[in-house]
Amino acid sequence: MKQSKIMVVDDEPITRFDIKEILKEKNYQVVGEAKNGEEAIKEAYELDPDLILMDIKMPKVDGIKASSIIKEFSSCSILLLTAYSDDEYIDQAKKAGINAYVVKPVNEKELNPAVEIALQQRANHLKMHKKIGKLEEKIKERKIIEKAKGYLMDQQGFTEENAYRNMQKESMEHHIPLIEIANRILASHSK
Ligand SMILES: [Mg+2]
Image (tube, rainbow, N blue to C red; front, top):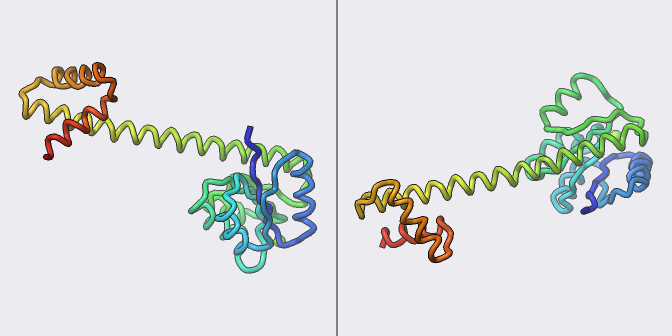
């Protein structure tokens, strides 16, 4: 299995160190670290991590703002690490699309399961994305096949069933996918 890539973002070097130690213990790969939101955005773009552990209170750009920007270009999971558990922060975190929230001080007992769940969310997200992409492709193909069928009906007087059968027969006899047959019919039509 591919090792997950994790980024650690916190303005306190000692906190980054502690988190990295916990992650290394679990054999996670820490691919980058940043000390403020601005750096985090830049690195997330360059490193394309699977998960970012993100502090909230940081100079320049805070962790919630950085997270919402990162979520616009990346499908990584983001786990907020913060000393604050006020409703206001939780609300903002929800709006920013945060995947998990762990209250500091960090300990491995709480961090490890949160990291695992957040990584799983990322994997699920990718799987779903792939599925949606395939479905969209299928719908697109279906539309082209329907169009080619309509052309055969209009131009060659086929019934709907016969038009479809004719295309299927071509596809089977010449070992060409149905979509390709449909594309060829439409291409010859537009000439
Ligand atoms: Mg901080």
